[in-house]
Image (cartoon, rainbow, N blue to C red):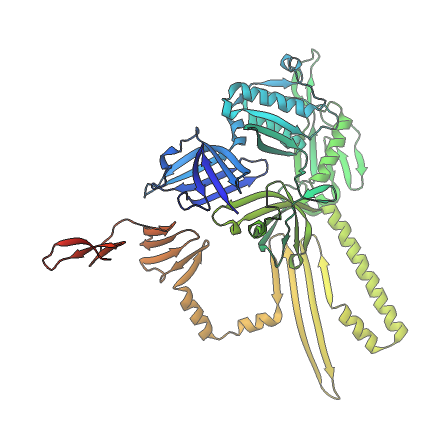
Length: 573
């Protein structure tokens, strides 16, 4: 797979040409966030001096024609060896450059004069924001509105601000946080275009209603590492809903908001009650406490509608957020016929040991262009809600009770010890799930009974999953490890004194020694007292100071010391 980076019309990096090389070029992309491209350029690069902060346009391509990044240089840091560490930000950051004056949508006269033909109020409002942005921006900062698939169920929104906000702040707070969706920047005929999508429909094979990347992530093939983190930080069990501002007798807005306090108290649905100005999930609050959130809907003017929105929002607020970080090899490197990983795609992930077989939206990706096999992917998926977990636990409990009844009936009907033994072995795989942990145990019992002796051996494997960690307990393996002799442990400790792995780098040299060697993905460094005194990268050696005790050879020529104490330079081949 070929990657190229350009500064305006100058080639900075080509993964297939030694003349145009950069150190550690990495592209980081995340949904609804500004993309970042970073790299280090050395003084011997032919276009070292062609990069200018803010004004230079930086583009990156995959396989010549696929534009994967467009943006500007935001920072440049000069290092000890005069190398420059460059950081670039994507074109979505242009929305931070311009200011939207105080507004009141759709009541201001300026919105009546906006000539835009659209039946979608979301598209209408976003187009107005971009018009305000473009009226202040230079040509290269201009952003046109593309496809908008996010809609409002009532096709009516009320948005206002008394503050001076950036165009990005208006879009983020007045659209993304209220209606969700995804912002996608791309280029058409050299122009920056912004899409606002409810979901992604990228090319690939179809799975249900989603279009999916043709490449899968599968255990035993391209899955390298997987970390799952479960967070309940955003969970709420109670909602205090606020609607539009109330008006006085003259029709002027006051500092008070519409609430649901005027509606009758009582049970709204199973486990949901309304008291005063708030609603509460009583079942979950008993277990997890009363965790309240204040939510505003500026466009709601009736308490009944406000209460309905609060009930829906509460249902969405009682879910764990599961963030899965996957490190996978992009098989596009070996097979051009399959699709490469791209932000905003749905990817089929399958790993039997981790219990994963589902579609995940690729929300974050980090691509090291020199080492594409080190691509890191983050995918997010909301797990079962608390209510769903309670129902599932009840179902599991009912199944266990049913199975116990069957075992008892089998024993009564057969009256056979053999029958009980068979059922015991069959039931030796147990599963337990509650609100705090998932426990699984697989065990096999070997029993041999002679005339007067009994031998019994248990082989057991336990698995424990909580919101903090996965724990595997192998009882037989644990015994073996604990019984390792002291000599083996001492030999291992002696090895790690001289060879260590630190943040993905290999460190050679005795601990606390002043001289060490560090091997990184793209550089070999010589360290003395923790300071890099020399390094090798891109087929070249860089050294701060050098001393040759006898001779120095450069190709077919060499410097040789004479017996007289002078130095000669001559051809040797």
